[in-house]
Image (cartoon, rainbow, N blue to C red; front, top):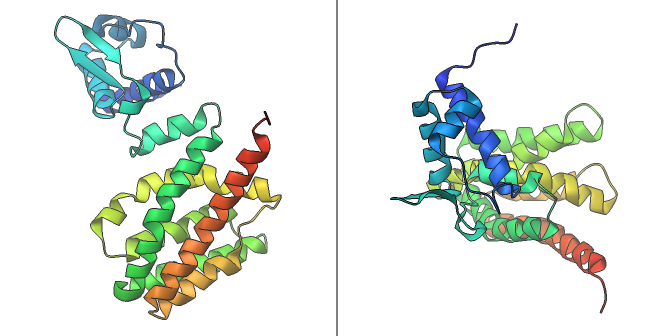
Length: 239
Protein backbone atom coordinates (compact mmCIF):
# COMPACT_ATOMS: atom_id res chain seq x y z
CA UNK A 1 0.00 0.00 0.00
CA UNK A 2 1.45 3.35 -1.02
CA UNK A 3 2.21 5.72 1.85
CA UNK A 4 0.16 8.89 1.94
CA UNK A 5 2.27 11.98 1.35
CA UNK A 6 2.15 14.70 3.99
CA UNK A 7 1.65 18.30 2.75
CA UNK A 8 5.36 18.97 3.32
CA UNK A 9 6.45 15.87 1.40
CA UNK A 10 3.95 16.61 -1.36
CA UNK A 11 5.29 20.14 -1.67
CA UNK A 12 8.85 18.79 -1.98
CA UNK A 13 7.70 16.25 -4.55
CA UNK A 14 6.07 18.98 -6.62
CA UNK A 15 9.17 21.17 -6.34
CA UNK A 16 11.35 18.30 -7.60
CA UNK A 17 9.00 17.50 -10.47
CA UNK A 18 8.54 21.08 -11.64
CA UNK A 19 12.20 21.97 -11.05
CA UNK A 20 13.39 19.19 -13.33
CA UNK A 21 10.80 20.15 -15.95
CA UNK A 22 11.94 23.78 -15.88
CA UNK A 23 15.64 22.96 -16.06
CA UNK A 24 15.15 20.48 -18.92
CA UNK A 25 13.30 23.12 -20.94
CA UNK A 26 9.72 21.85 -20.88
CA UNK A 27 8.34 25.37 -20.50
CA UNK A 28 10.72 27.06 -22.92
CA UNK A 29 7.89 27.54 -25.44
CA UNK A 30 4.96 27.03 -23.10
CA UNK A 31 3.14 29.12 -20.53
CA UNK A 32 3.82 27.97 -16.98
CA UNK A 33 0.68 26.39 -15.47
CA UNK A 34 -1.59 28.48 -13.27
CA UNK A 35 -2.07 27.64 -9.62
CA UNK A 36 -5.44 25.98 -10.20
CA UNK A 37 -3.96 23.84 -12.98
CA UNK A 38 -1.13 22.69 -10.74
CA UNK A 39 -3.60 21.84 -7.97
CA UNK A 40 -5.59 19.67 -10.38
CA UNK A 41 -2.48 18.07 -11.85
CA UNK A 42 -1.08 17.02 -8.48
CA UNK A 43 -4.41 16.57 -6.71
CA UNK A 44 -3.14 18.97 -4.07
CA UNK A 45 -4.54 21.92 -2.14
CA UNK A 46 -3.74 25.29 -3.64
CA UNK A 47 -1.80 26.19 -0.49
CA UNK A 48 0.55 23.28 -1.27
CA UNK A 49 1.13 24.20 -4.93
CA UNK A 50 1.45 27.88 -3.94
CA UNK A 51 4.23 26.96 -1.51
CA UNK A 52 5.97 24.88 -4.20
CA UNK A 53 5.89 27.84 -6.60
CA UNK A 54 7.28 30.09 -3.86
CA UNK A 55 10.17 27.69 -3.32
CA UNK A 56 10.97 27.59 -7.03
CA UNK A 57 10.75 31.38 -7.12
CA UNK A 58 13.27 31.61 -4.26
CA UNK A 59 15.63 29.49 -6.36
CA UNK A 60 15.36 31.98 -9.22
CA UNK A 61 13.57 29.59 -11.57
CA UNK A 62 10.23 31.41 -11.53
CA UNK A 63 8.95 34.94 -11.11
CA UNK A 64 5.46 36.27 -10.55
CA UNK A 65 4.23 39.63 -11.79
CA UNK A 66 0.85 41.30 -11.26
CA UNK A 67 -1.57 40.57 -14.13
CA UNK A 68 1.17 38.60 -15.93
CA UNK A 69 1.11 35.40 -13.91
CA UNK A 70 4.07 33.14 -13.21
CA UNK A 71 6.80 32.71 -15.78
CA UNK A 72 10.04 30.77 -16.09
CA UNK A 73 13.13 32.93 -15.68
CA UNK A 74 16.15 32.76 -18.01
CA UNK A 75 18.93 30.42 -16.87
CA UNK A 76 21.18 33.34 -15.95
CA UNK A 77 18.73 34.17 -13.13
CA UNK A 78 18.78 30.70 -11.58
CA UNK A 79 20.53 30.28 -8.25
CA UNK A 80 23.35 27.93 -9.19
CA UNK A 81 24.55 27.91 -5.57
CA UNK A 82 21.35 26.14 -4.58
CA UNK A 83 22.20 22.41 -4.30
CA UNK A 84 18.87 21.32 -5.83
CA UNK A 85 19.22 23.63 -8.83
CA UNK A 86 22.80 22.49 -9.34
CA UNK A 87 21.76 18.83 -9.14
CA UNK A 88 18.95 19.34 -11.66
CA UNK A 89 21.37 21.06 -14.02
CA UNK A 90 23.97 18.32 -13.71
CA UNK A 91 21.36 15.59 -14.13
CA UNK A 92 20.08 16.94 -17.41
CA UNK A 93 22.16 16.42 -20.55
CA UNK A 94 25.68 16.30 -19.12
CA UNK A 95 27.58 19.56 -19.57
CA UNK A 96 31.35 19.41 -19.24
CA UNK A 97 31.40 23.20 -19.48
CA UNK A 98 29.23 23.49 -16.35
CA UNK A 99 31.47 21.03 -14.52
CA UNK A 100 34.53 23.08 -15.49
CA UNK A 101 32.90 26.25 -14.15
CA UNK A 102 32.07 24.48 -10.90
CA UNK A 103 35.66 23.23 -10.57
CA UNK A 104 36.91 26.77 -11.08
CA UNK A 105 34.77 27.80 -8.10
CA UNK A 106 36.22 24.92 -6.07
CA UNK A 107 39.70 26.17 -6.96
CA UNK A 108 38.87 29.55 -5.43
CA UNK A 109 37.26 28.05 -2.31
CA UNK A 110 38.83 24.79 -1.14
CA UNK A 111 42.53 25.81 -0.99
CA UNK A 112 41.54 28.69 1.29
CA UNK A 113 39.48 26.34 3.44
CA UNK A 114 42.44 23.95 3.72
CA UNK A 115 44.72 26.83 4.70
CA UNK A 116 42.35 27.89 7.49
CA UNK A 117 41.78 24.31 8.62
CA UNK A 118 45.50 23.90 9.22
CA UNK A 119 45.35 26.91 11.54
CA UNK A 120 42.10 26.49 13.44
CA UNK A 121 40.73 22.94 13.12
CA UNK A 122 39.66 21.37 16.41
CA UNK A 123 40.75 17.93 17.49
CA UNK A 124 37.46 16.39 16.39
CA UNK A 125 37.62 18.13 13.00
CA UNK A 126 41.17 16.88 12.45
CA UNK A 127 39.98 13.41 13.39
CA UNK A 128 37.17 13.66 10.81
CA UNK A 129 39.70 14.52 8.09
CA UNK A 130 41.88 11.61 9.17
CA UNK A 131 38.90 9.24 9.18
CA UNK A 132 37.99 10.29 5.65
CA UNK A 133 41.51 9.52 4.45
CA UNK A 134 41.35 6.16 6.21
CA UNK A 135 38.09 5.43 4.39
CA UNK A 136 39.69 6.37 1.05
CA UNK A 137 42.49 3.87 1.65
CA UNK A 138 39.88 1.30 2.64
CA UNK A 139 38.06 2.00 -0.63
CA UNK A 140 41.26 1.23 -2.51
CA UNK A 141 41.13 -2.21 -0.89
CA UNK A 142 37.48 -2.61 -1.81
CA UNK A 143 36.37 -2.22 1.81
CA UNK A 144 34.54 1.12 1.56
CA UNK A 145 32.78 3.36 -0.96
CA UNK A 146 35.21 5.41 -3.04
CA UNK A 147 32.79 8.21 -3.90
CA UNK A 148 31.38 8.93 -0.45
CA UNK A 149 34.77 8.70 1.26
CA UNK A 150 36.22 11.21 -1.22
CA UNK A 151 33.27 13.56 -0.68
CA UNK A 152 33.56 13.17 3.10
CA UNK A 153 37.17 14.31 2.92
CA UNK A 154 36.37 17.53 1.05
CA UNK A 155 33.38 18.27 3.29
CA UNK A 156 35.49 17.63 6.41
CA UNK A 157 38.02 20.22 5.23
CA UNK A 158 35.28 22.81 4.68
CA UNK A 159 33.88 22.08 8.15
CA UNK A 160 37.35 22.36 9.71
CA UNK A 161 37.99 25.80 8.22
CA UNK A 162 36.08 27.50 11.03
CA UNK A 163 34.60 29.86 8.43
CA UNK A 164 30.80 29.93 8.31
CA UNK A 165 30.77 30.95 4.63
CA UNK A 166 32.90 27.97 3.61
CA UNK A 167 30.65 25.76 5.72
CA UNK A 168 27.58 27.16 3.95
CA UNK A 169 29.02 25.83 0.68
CA UNK A 170 29.06 22.27 2.00
CA UNK A 171 25.83 21.13 0.33
CA UNK A 172 26.73 22.69 -3.01
CA UNK A 173 30.21 21.15 -2.99
CA UNK A 174 28.85 17.77 -1.92
CA UNK A 175 26.14 17.79 -4.62
CA UNK A 176 28.46 18.68 -7.46
CA UNK A 177 31.29 16.41 -6.30
CA UNK A 178 29.01 13.42 -6.84
CA UNK A 179 29.18 14.22 -10.55
CA UNK A 180 32.66 15.71 -10.69
CA UNK A 181 34.54 12.85 -9.03
CA UNK A 182 32.78 10.23 -11.13
CA UNK A 183 33.48 12.10 -14.36
CA UNK A 184 37.13 12.93 -13.68
CA UNK A 185 37.81 9.31 -12.73
CA UNK A 186 36.13 8.25 -15.98
CA UNK A 187 38.33 10.68 -17.91
CA UNK A 188 41.43 9.24 -16.20
CA UNK A 189 40.27 5.72 -16.94
CA UNK A 190 40.49 4.82 -13.25
CA UNK A 191 37.91 3.93 -10.62
CA UNK A 192 39.43 5.75 -7.67
CA UNK A 193 40.81 9.22 -6.98
CA UNK A 194 44.45 9.52 -5.95
CA UNK A 195 44.38 8.82 -2.22
CA UNK A 196 48.05 9.78 -1.92
CA UNK A 197 47.34 13.29 -3.24
CA UNK A 198 44.45 13.68 -0.79
CA UNK A 199 46.63 12.42 2.06
CA UNK A 200 49.22 15.10 1.29
CA UNK A 201 46.52 17.71 1.91
CA UNK A 202 45.43 15.97 5.11
CA UNK A 203 49.01 15.62 6.39
CA UNK A 204 49.64 19.33 5.91
CA UNK A 205 46.42 20.24 7.74
CA UNK A 206 47.17 17.85 10.60
CA UNK A 207 50.71 19.25 10.84
CA UNK A 208 49.36 22.81 11.03
CA UNK A 209 51.22 23.81 7.84
CA UNK A 210 48.73 26.25 6.30
CA UNK A 211 50.81 27.20 3.25
CA UNK A 212 51.46 23.55 2.36
CA UNK A 213 47.80 22.63 2.91
CA UNK A 214 46.67 25.41 0.57
CA UNK A 215 49.23 24.44 -2.09
CA UNK A 216 48.42 20.72 -1.94
CA UNK A 217 44.66 21.33 -2.19
CA UNK A 218 45.17 23.74 -5.08
CA UNK A 219 47.32 21.17 -6.91
CA UNK A 220 44.69 18.50 -6.30
CA UNK A 221 41.83 20.53 -7.80
CA UNK A 222 43.94 22.09 -10.54
CA UNK A 223 44.84 18.60 -11.74
CA UNK A 224 41.15 17.74 -12.10
CA UNK A 225 40.46 21.05 -13.85
CA UNK A 226 43.34 20.61 -16.29
CA UNK A 227 42.03 17.16 -17.17
CA UNK A 228 38.52 18.47 -17.85
CA UNK A 229 39.82 21.32 -20.02
CA UNK A 230 41.91 18.84 -22.03
CA UNK A 231 38.92 16.53 -22.54
CA UNK A 232 36.79 19.49 -23.61
CA UNK A 233 39.45 20.57 -26.12
CA UNK A 234 39.68 17.02 -27.48
CA UNK A 235 35.88 16.91 -27.88
CA UNK A 236 35.65 20.28 -29.65
CA UNK A 237 35.51 19.84 -33.44
CA UNK A 238 38.44 21.44 -35.24
CA UNK A 239 37.55 24.18 -37.73
